[in-house]
Image (cartoon, rainbow, N blue to C red; front, side, top):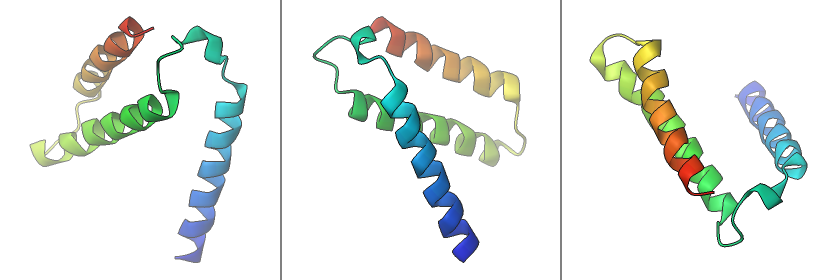
Amino acid sequence: MPELAQRMKQVKAKQVQLMDKLDMSCFRPDIDFQLMYKDMTWHALGLSLGACPRGSVDPETIEAEFNQLIDFWKSLS
């Protein structure tokens, strides 16, 4: 378990570094980016977990569904 906790800290640190590098001027001023990022993370996790009960993971289906979400998010900018 300590290894998992350490790995989670490393991932969180990389997320913070990524956020610091983003050009926020690309987004409309009324967009809550933190909330949008959380939404994107939850959707990505849900798409991957949703593939498991189907008995097999089809990367093309997951990619197509995720691309639909990305197109939606792009329409918000």
